[in-house]
Image (cartoon, rainbow, N blue to C red):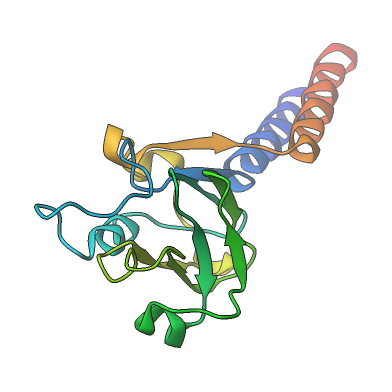
Length: 171
């Protein structure tokens, strides 16, 4: 009986760790959010985004200088213009948390930058389609990611570990 309870608690513990995580993606890798050079393709960021799998609660980290990041509608993305962005930041170090599934359309708010390729479409998977583990995402220098857990998840893990420890001692 003792082994059955221990095994059950261990399975519950590891299941919670593997299913509740998020990833912070470094948009553009080492280069960051910059205008693609002439040797880069104009769809540089779309290609980068297509190589990653984004889920709800993941974050996108944009590092840039003298620019901005806007989340806009599909139509505004196509026109590279937005008078009413859904999200705007120009602090040079922007973190955007993905809060739903579907498509997100990003553009630079600086005149001419979007037209030169500083834009991106991100497709976010629905919760039911999350079958990715952390090692399925490329982690080379141009596509850096990091795992993160919030304080609630960490608290749950501590409680589960404590319960497992108590059960193995008292049972």
